Length: 373
Image 1 (cartoon, rainbow, N blue to C red):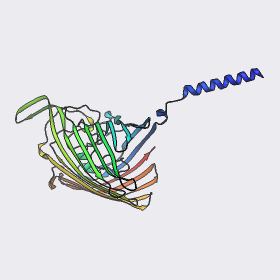
Image 2 (cartoon, one colour):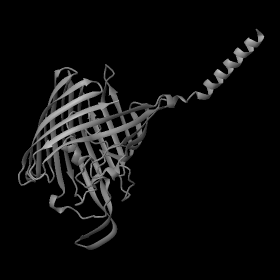
Image 3 (spheres, one colour):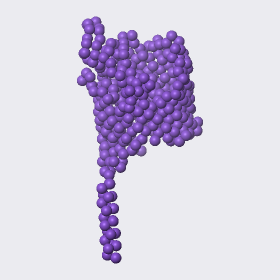
Image 4 (cartoon, rainbow, N blue to C red):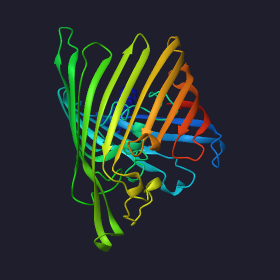
């Protein structure tokens, strides 16, 4: 009996030791793995550029968690790319931490979305349409007008943000955010040692409504070669000042979504874009498109069957030279169907009027099946 008791104690001791050895820190237990894939079919009858193809629009995987409650962190990788630049994938799109002890004063450090416009920081599935509006794509570091490499609206820097001025129902009425960034896009050090400063502020007068303004001051720079009125330059840094502002509004009520934004840009662009992240030493300026551009969009997403089927429409305009002869306008209509919270089907038809083309009018059809985990 004594021997059996001793063996039992020994077994329990080994079990306790094993449990102690395998106990993980709390922050590891809080780590969450997530991701999403956006599959796409797109048709276009544009003259001399017809297309009819399946595609993986986006594929991403992320880890996120907390350290001692006050610190939130996230690392996100993109594992797909354009068919001409697959060598640049996978790549880091997010890598940041944020101190969140106080709701009115949060500090974010790393690589993340630039603090400009309402739509830029939205999840690409949740924003509702086949792509972000042209105001975001062309003036918010996606396929940016300036020629900076495609950066999914992100940059490296530091940002402070917060919500305050609660009403009687403890709903905050005011939000602010301001950030300092390299101005060179993702995964890239500063070139001209001059930072971009971007800020925004919005009021929330009623539940579901946001009315905001944003401003951005900075430069995009390259080190390379060019020739101008002062002569030939080789191996020098050339920087192009970029001044932008946005006026934004959004209202979500009874499962309806209304959103509209106007963005204006002043600043020249490089002639050769760093498309797909490919570096270039060509610092020639694109004088043909001038130094001004603007864009606006207005959209509505309406419930047909609440939480299941939605109809949608969007007017989307971009003027690369801030005048009508350079305009590209998209008239879009379609629907979104939610099989469940993780699987969604999106379809839309677009009539495009691009005055930069010899034949400006053409049609597009886009269908996407998106899933997340």
